[in-house]
Length: 131
Image (cartoon, rainbow, N blue to C red; front, side, top):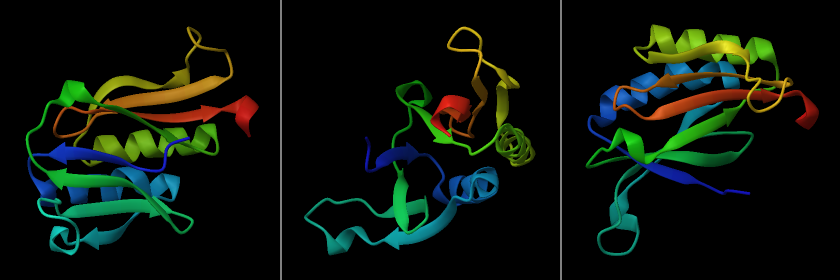
């Protein structure tokens, strides 16, 4: 199980605005800003997103390689996958695959995938057997 993920973004304000919209249907919100000066030397400033009292997805400004990360976000229903996909597209994402069953994994694996403004692959996932 993961506790947190950091990704580098090229424009922190643009990415915050994108993720605030794209993750809202999943109940994930911009929750905490961390000033890197509070940490050890060289620690980056971070913008944290989370839900249910946990901050687990962090943005930091830096060098981007959109191929370097794929992040899957849990949805509680197919409807949430559809809503997150629509919100991400409205916020400026580009389509990788629209919502639907991912039969190459499992017929009960329902997901949609987009690229964020920096080219990172984001997936919104509902796995029926995990709910």
